[in-house]
Length: 86
Length: 140
Image (cartoon, rainbow over all chains, first blue to last red; front, side, top):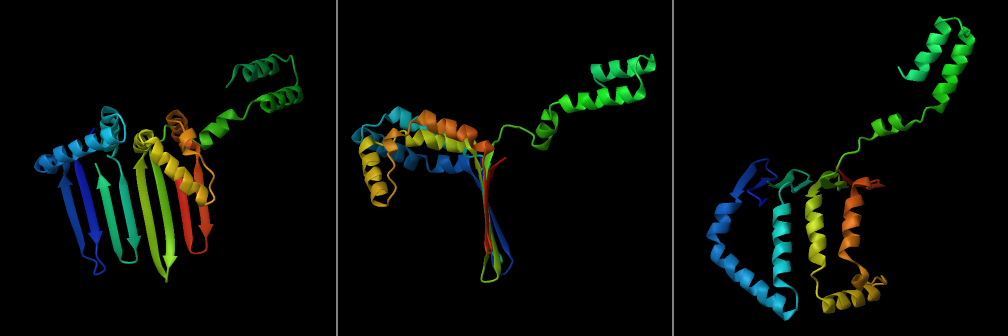
């Protein structure tokens, strides 16, 4: 299943947190023209390096769909960054 | 209560054996019991879903913490990605590894071997303890 929401929380040294919620599907739709171009460039690169484009596409999709559940939490002193993918 | 213990107690009740004999028989029965149940309870065996990397540091008196949770499914997908690396890139990587003193042939690494490796990651725990840092890698 494709990621649906990316959450980022940044705690600044002054203690004030910033929270950002990024809904993935609307962002993908907005950037879809760029995404199509990127897929085309990737397909050409696959042809140049003699890699199966379909296999590469499938693997890319598997990676994207395996992302939900990822969580990265970094704290240093009074600064902290937390990124979660749901 | 298991069947053999019940038989021993029945024989004691019927007066076929004495209390001392019953005690000896029960003790012998307990010696023969495999300790499997206890070891299974100590570590519940479930299918691990995530790889966790936890790093606790102490830099200039300031505590730091890195806590990363990666789905094992992502590792499996990444392993499949490695299978797509063109042979010429693997050759270059091999040459660089050799130069760095790591004589490792990446072309010999098969995706199914990597899959098996990921499958058995849930049994792995790595702990590194240093005075100013502690690293733990495990699956949950």
